[in-house]
Image 1 (cartoon, one colour):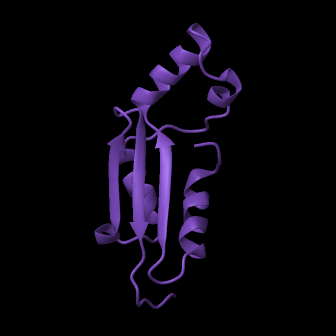
Image 2 (cartoon, rainbow, N blue to C red):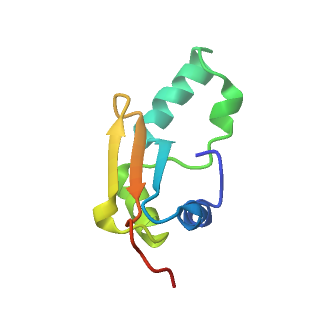
Length: 101
């Protein structure tokens, strides 16, 4: 993730969604950290400046609590590994009818 602080950023994603809205979040995983840094710093195949800009790495168990803490309800969250487990992806849906506090 290239933004921070992460919990506040995810809360803002949630705040901006209307009822029935969908948020898609794609972040590098811890396995991805090793692969991306090897590709950038050892092989020179990826831009090193992008790797140095990563603020955090997440597996689903790291990202899930941040999503719930931001106000997404568990039944509206799909969080999984993809791209050979190098990334973690979350699709978060808000209820179509909801009341905000």
